[in-house]
Amino acid sequence: MGSKAGHLLPITIVLVVANVAAWVWAGFGLGAAPEAMAAALLAYTLGLKHAVDADHIAAIDNTTRKLMGEGRRSLAGGLWFSLGHSTVVVLVTLAIALASDGARARLDGLKDAGALLGTAVSVLFLVVIGLGNLVVLLRLWRQWKCGEVAAPAMPAGPMNRLLRPVLRLVSRSWHLYPVGLLFGLGFDTASEIGLLGLSAAAAVHGLPLYAVLAYPLLFTAAMMLVDALDGVMMSGLYGWALQDPSRKIGYNLFVTLLSVGVAFGIGLVEAAGLIGDKMGLADDLWIAVGRLNDQFGSLGVGVVAAFLVAWLAAYVIDRWRRPTTV
Image (cartoon, rainbow, N blue to C red; front, side, top):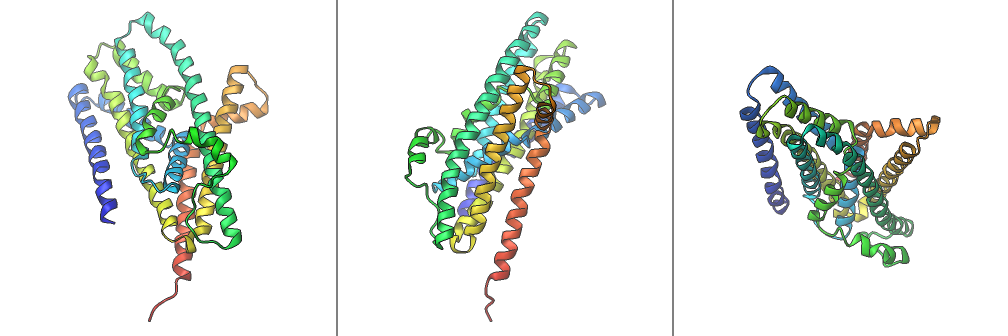
């Protein structure tokens, strides 16, 4: 327990420093005018909202499951993912603030290309990481059917041999930094568009560069907070299941199934939304898919809630079944 607290300390320090520093920067850069503080609060809220987008949750949760199934600690996965994403947010905002009016118009084309690349990377990553966890799920299912209680390991089957070169690319928590970087290229969500709008308006109204940067810094500080907490929470939930496989293999089986379903489901929705948008499809099915893509924040909250409810139910059942000592 002390070891886990020791690993949590640097994460806590980074989050506290990042959030306090972002608000101090905003205070000095934007001043105390009500409209400036309202815009700053909006940027922070957009960051909180963006962090619970379903693709963030799916990527962090599935990677946490994969790493812990391999016996690796993964407390900082969410933090590294958000740091990668934040790098793109700050760089794009810098480009907007420094660009001329004509250059800002040309940035729209780059934004479209980035959205295509970012969504494609997101879909590919979620499918591959989902397949890796599917291998673990099949192993868990066989263990459960045979009454085995050993902790799940990645079996050496043909699917695993096929996926191993790709899955090996994410074998440490910090490997989520480039994943978050690539995810960040898809500037096509309401939260990120809202942030870009705030930054562009600030630049047009003549605010100095250091003041414009307050918006992406607040956005990224909020996003880091939620993504990091999600990674720590999922590490705790999966770790609880792995502590005592004899009692918790059913829970482990369920949350692994949920992880795989989330990865494939979110990847499918993103892929369908991309296809429908690029091909201009407008029938009822594609309209429904588009609406799902617009509700990624709600989907992400639902996924987190499902994991928490599953853990709470398993914890209550485990306590109820545990023999009492006199």
